[in-house]
Image 1 (cartoon, rainbow, N blue to C red):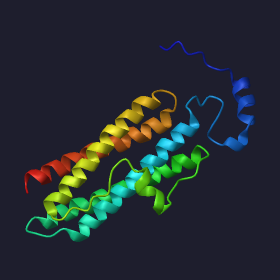
Image 2 (image 1 turned 135 degrees about the horizontal axis):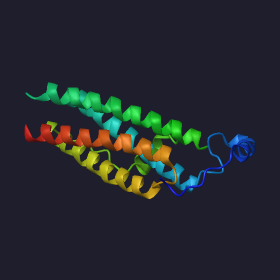
Image 3 (image 1 turned 180 degrees about the horizontal axis):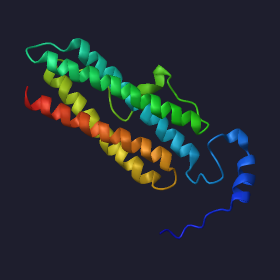
Image 4 (image 1 turned 180 degrees about the vertical axis):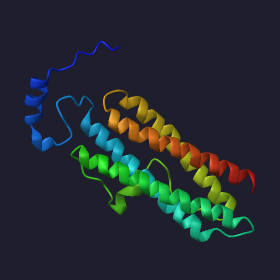
Length: 176
């Protein structure tokens, strides 16, 4: 059992009525909200850049093994956009604004948008981007720690799927 003292119900009720305009951000929120919003927006940009790259690869895939790779590219693009939706929703919950300005996406993204000239280069660039996301998101999870469990869980869920994506791309790369 933890050493955390539980707040009495009367105090919880009183605190809930203060600053109701802050929505989900209560007095108990202990993270640096501005820093969390910055990290969420950088991650949002990363997910959009990855989705766009996967979509391009889906359309540009050619060669004898193209159909298998294209199916993976399309699936990953869809999942990256699902990640982006979760991140944008969390940004709004924390009182921020999702930065979807196209001019800012590649500037704020941790991963680069590298098109690749052939199927092997496309898969390699996707694998590199997934590895960047994995390390980045793992560090963000460690940074957040216990200060914002909701955001941490979102990152943990996304990280698990990014690891699957990297595994898929590594398998594809072996077959090329």
